[in-house]
Image (cartoon, rainbow, N blue to C red):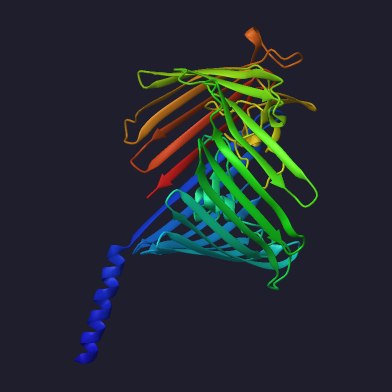
Length: 451
């Protein structure tokens, strides 16, 4: 009788856990065919992600199949219990049937202090390496202070400082601002420095943030096993210089043993420009001398009756990015340096911050690559007849560049996409890419299912 009672309790507990849990997932498949010179496969991916949610924790398994076959497999678990949260990821390379990496991180919040730790074992240079990190970030009033020590890992505290521990504890999925053009997956943020499983000290990093007069001040110091003292850096952000149209985004100095590096980063303040958005470049801003201010591009966007109409013109494809990602300790403000401004197949993506360079809409003729410098398009979203959402977009590209393959009015090509919900959880997609140089360059179709 006692055994039957105990068994009944276990069955009831199991049923209760199963009922409180939730199984959900996504299956996203896209096939793109190239028509130029015959029908060939341009790109293909099929992404399956299954999640099991129970008690505030998520158990996840995902896989990606592309044109080369099975390319990624990973297993993930993450969640929180009160002030404690943890994350774990294991990934494999099915192409070579090899182990990729095993990453782990945990964080606990105690009395205003976030203490975190990370551990990784991953393939590195044909071998296996392991790394550790331990740090903490705390706030007292307006002052924020943090410190970190790593073993066989580069310093991670600045990314955690700005974005939280999730900056390193997740894989990323990029689809070029559209489900219908391209996709890429990135995993393995916690990569060891060298292929060694020895516990080797790498870096000690300390950082502080506090308000000073009319600016936010950051100070950062780093020590390493290789050099001892690495640098001390101090930076002031959002400095008011008394000009409404010009902003001193950052000014700072980094001190090394044998040199000092000083830098400034300016930004143009456009204010409320309604539906027009200008893109400016300030040449020479890093040296503190404003040699010239260039209007690189101008875009227009407005919504009428459920449809977004937009236009953009690039006056100069060269984009100097000085300030958007500078952090203490970086000796050069020109993060990314000279970039190329370009249009995405859909929307108005421009520089590296907006989308990956591989997402640019370009026309290749022989060894020459041509970027359109003008585009206009429309994107409309309506309710589908079968549930879900129906949307379509038409984007036209033009060029005034000498030698570019253009037709009437400088037309280079058109990209069209359609997406329709045929149920509350199913979407079908279609895309067509036409250029003056190749005619119908490619078409694609796909399906996305969620449950």
